[in-house]
Image (cartoon, rainbow, N blue to C red; front, side, top):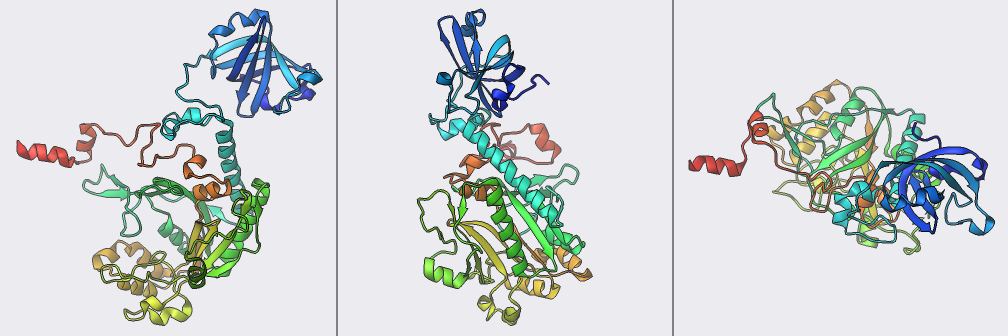
Length: 469
């Protein structure tokens, strides 16, 4: 290793020790023949003291240059202790300094007190992420995901990854399509969620599954939704009732907040249960903000919304449209309504988790009876061609399907709400811009003509030119 200590871990315990540190020059200043550098790494910042043999060369050193130093840790005099720094009791007297890489002038300011345009922040995200508040948010994201993994592992869940290249099916938002080089004229789709795979995993007998799943949807941006891709805690269980899913999820979030976000307080436990109909009548929304003091940034008000209609109130092209998705189980007592006349009377086993006025997770008990699934397909207007898209599901359901259900809290949105951020992009390392661009990588971008030819593709603009010849 090029260092034997982290900057942020130095205290009086290391006094008189020789240390080697590496990091970025956070600030540098000279006072006559002596100089000071605040050296920063992931763990924090420590002050370096430089005597006259170094100060003459400091004029060539720039902020954010990467250096390696060797020196001795010393306790600061009481009157020079910096209480604003974790390492404010000590400084390191530099004996050797090596400039590893020199930084050019920065295209944005990474001082936390100076705002930069979001477009600039996203273009130079690798610099923006150096800011301590961004480092802290990414660290909290890591800790939250690790807690979730450990919690579910102790509950007997298997983390199983599912394919990224999958099949395009007529559901939800627009798919991102991926052309196949081997199978000309055919396309994969990036998964909008692992919905069908996780149900097939229940058919396979795994009983308890989860993954931190990337999901891809070609939809417009909102403050609480990043276009293109997002991550969710995808969770599915066999041999359960809706209450089992709600209790497990509730326990997970209560313990997560307590462990990873101890400064936050959940206003009410158990989480209130609201029926969809009552929720709309009382609050005018199915995402109510139940905080007692909406100005209190540390208050978290969770609630469950249940008893959703199985279908939307309005028809789409003369057919019913699922309120949740087409795999949601109707209430047992409402199976009798699965006909064209009465379908919109049916309620379902859908459940939404709401936090401070945001839907942060949704799930349901799934259909496990192929006859019920066929009826739902008929009611939403699927013909034989559209049903064929889901033939793998209907085939699987012929071979013994457990009662199963689950939930999929969105990690990005949940973290945004917990941390009180106004934009979901603040909790994602490399988010897309509002117009679905990756400004850091300059994506999407044009590709070479040879790449298109290899895929047997031609752009519409090129086709028109070709036809004119």
